[in-house]
Length: 435
Image (cartoon, rainbow, N blue to C red; front, side):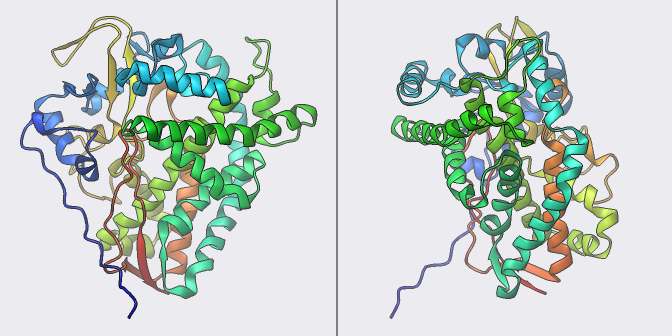
């Protein structure tokens, strides 16, 4: 008799009893961090994490003020070589990782998200052109067709792993189309982005981090010939723009180190990974909230926009990122010293009851649904937000149009999170449905 796989047991939420119980490097807490966020908002809205040393900011108004106050909080220390979030945890290990890049590949330069004005503004102007509204609008028919194609491929089965069969491939195929990557290569790219994201998550051993760096270097060697070919023969792709467009203030286009940083961090991770997670959590929320499913089915034109914004607010794909304090600064009675790193927890702010009525609820009739911080705020507001929203729109629209009812596949989901300090990502989402 064939051995049967035992049913998966869903993870139980971990509820901290005190601030001392909060550990954002714990996979158990990451499964459901919202209890910890609520405790921090109420008891310590600016909290120095004793494990990382980061100053964790959790209230909506405080987060927005930090993001908008680039005179006090910036990325400059990172760009000047003091290191980013991972380097802050183990500077010696960071040196060994940098040596590995230099030996076998290209040391990634600071990304667009890691720069400050005027350098940031000068570089962003190039991407503003690449992501201008008309260009996104021109991609919309392709996004729509791809979403329906992916749904139709599993429709007759009556079940799917929504994560693997829709949430992952849709954004990767779309960004691949923009940069001229063949569709058959997207799963190899997914392996590289997974490795990059795991390193971002700051929860790896040194051996695991070395593996992540070597995977990124493998990706660099995949893209380097494409850069060189486009320098000789430019085309109308986004990648050709990135390779060849001269930044006027710099008097040159991006160099190889800058291009490799952008390909992984801002193009493929920023352009696919976060959208993947939002598409996955959207379906999870719909199954958990059948009234919302009924409303969306009844009038998708009316409710789709609000639903998308509520998914982004409730399950922020980027749980939090980082800023540096340029000078001593006081926030909520806490003195943040110059040179300290702040962890701005978007996901905590997006469930702040002082900003959102009934913040834990999925409300398709919420007023001003887009005022969340899932895409950041200020000069670093996510460039890819309009495209991400279109990908979410068509993935959910194809689902609503093709499927009548759905449920979690019994015994197949544990709703396990991929361990990561910064991102929130399901590993799988098995559903069953009727058409």
